[in-house]
Length: 220
Ligand SMILES: Cc1cc2nc3c(=O)[nH]c(=O)nc-3n(C[C@H](O)[C@H](O)[C@H](O)COP(=O)(O)O)c2cc1C
Image (cartoon, rainbow, N blue to C red; front, side, top):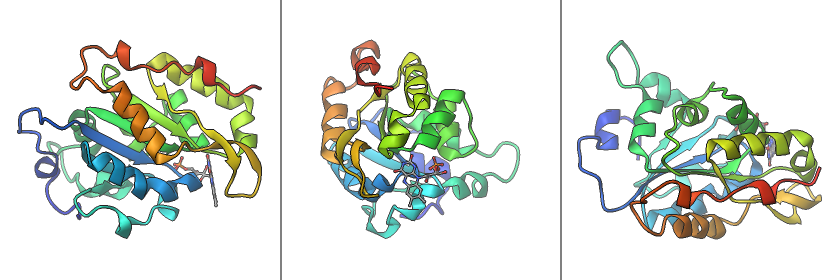
């Protein structure tokens, strides 16, 4: 599906709360974004899905392979949708539309930006505007050297305080050939984690959804 329709029409903001949760899936520039299509297909079974991709992630996401009913938004859409005062602002509309956000993969760069409150692209603007009474999950994916870097635990602690839930990475042979922790959890695992956390839909309270990250921090 293209993004040529008005945002308002795409996001169906005038419609009552749907029976299906509205899940915003986002990919950042980790090589694990090659699995984004699989993630989209998993969530499509259960939820209304919209997708967001950073510029770097588009090196790994095969747009043509995504399910045809899923709109993929990029930074270009943010600006092509806005021409004058009074026009809708895409990151705000997506933030209002989504019941749940899942960033998978989460790159080291986007993790750092979220932890620092930076918002220089569509994905990070949505997070910067996020309503933390709604669940937000992240599945980091990075080389073991990056994962074990002290910045990672600092940034994870910060986003944990915001109420963001971590789907921890796994240990395996990485795309670069190194063996170690930092690979993104499998899409099926990410999907199962979100489904279990959100099994009573709509949720009563956000507190029941938070999976503390403290026991999953890198060792350094
Ligand atoms: C081939 C290649 C693979 C990369 N893989 C990863 C990765 O797995 N994890 C990561 O955090 N960064 C990875 N990077 C670096 C990010 O793409 C880079 O930091 C980029 O600025 C991330 O942008 P984004 O966070 O806006 O998507 C990779 C870069 C290249 C060139």
